[in-house]
Image (cartoon, rainbow, N blue to C red; front, side, top):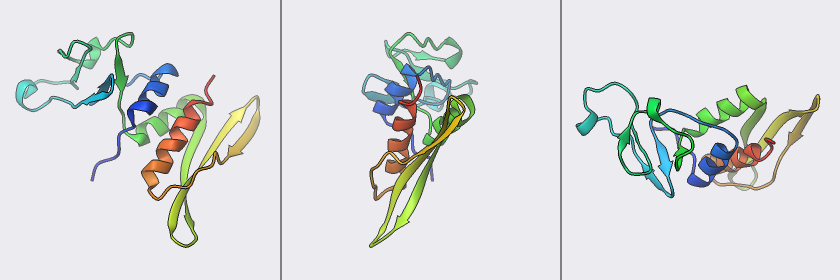
Length: 141
């Protein structure tokens, strides 16, 4: 089982909010380039990604001004929102005729604690989570 990566649209918003992550995957335009650690890079240390010219680079050479977009797991972006911006994103199950999910966002604004449910009902947990992450990113000024 692997944790779901954020979607490209979320990656674009995250980058615009100054989220930079030197990890296993980056988006380049609308394509996701997967980490290259086996094969070509076997035996080398570090997390690899492609730059805008499709050349393998190491994250220590990552340049946030290029058309790279970080592609972390939803959980890692959630942690960044919580630790950096004090915004908590929590998908919540609802049980009516069937199990569905909504999302709750808790954040502080000028010393006031705000709890919002931005709407939307999703059949899949990760879809609700993605919606919540996008909404939470848009709260950052």
